[in-house]
Amino acid sequence: MPSITSPASAIPNPVVTMPAPAIAAGIAHGGRLIEARRRFPSAPQPFLDLSTGINPHPYPLAPIDPARLARLPEPEELSRLQAVAARAYGVADPDMVVATPGTQIAISLLPHLLGCSRAVILSPTYAEHAAAWRHAGRPVEAAAGLEAFERGAMLPGTAAVLCNPNNPDGARSDRVRLLALAAGLARQGGVLICDEAFLDLEPDMASLGTALPHPGLLVLRSFGKTYGLAGIRLGFVLASPGLAGRLRSAFGPWAIGGLAIEAGCAALADEAWRAGMAERLLGDGAELDRLLLRYGWRSRGGTALFRLYQVRQATRLYAHLGEAGVLVRRFEHQPDLLRLGLPGDSGGWARLEGALATAALS
Image (cartoon, rainbow, N blue to C red; front, side, top):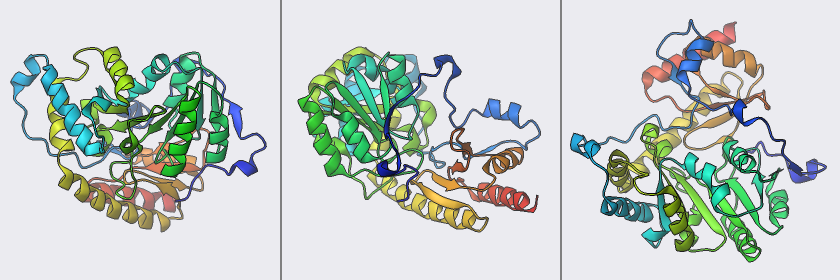
């Protein structure tokens, strides 16, 4: 799959220390509809939000007993969720599964819990990983390309971080090669952190989680993106039992609410829904590529939940689409790229095509 990552040979120094921007400045993400209304006050409502990588077809949850919201969840209920997640993710032991209130909190806490002295991150990628390690006072290096990533990881006490498939370009890293890197990291007190947030709906990709227990490996899995239930705030860390136990203790009791437990148990156990959704989104992604190709957009890769495009006059097109009530994802440091999620219904597809047609005429 095409990648926006430049080959290491084309970069004089492919591993560089990343600057530490002010934490207060924050990181731009998709969504943020209230901010979008301020930016595009005349846009028709509601927005067609294609700026995130969240499944537009939410899992059909059964009604949940309101009494579940009136009491704290039981430890046995959390254990059940871990067991269901272990089966869904191919992990042999539920003790290697840590349920979290979204993977973002795990990303933020891992630099404080792992004891690694530095981080190297396969870049460009999801910016919160680098921000978390900087915020914890650790030096962060960005590696452009897998070879540079492997070289940068070969120092004692390194946390090597990557997304597989990658965000925003969907680039994939070889599983065998990553496991070899994890073994090398383990020998020198480091760890490979593999963020598999977008792997669930990629049926031809195998999770590194099936290699656990492994002393040099930790895997992150997202729930909300795959099942279109991002507001529930549920995610998982997969790790060897000892490390998983320390992480579970750090989160403390009742980190996961009853609603998230019920939703997680139902959706993760539904293998037929997941397989059908992967097939459906594969077709939707191909249709999005065909549509945008007609308007001169060039595909630069993606996953089942988003597509990345190189676009002439991307800044103008981003603004035009926003004024038409269609939100897409732009990148401040790569201004010729736009990332789009998938419309969820025929009305959404019509709105997108209408906005593209008017942009072509302007």
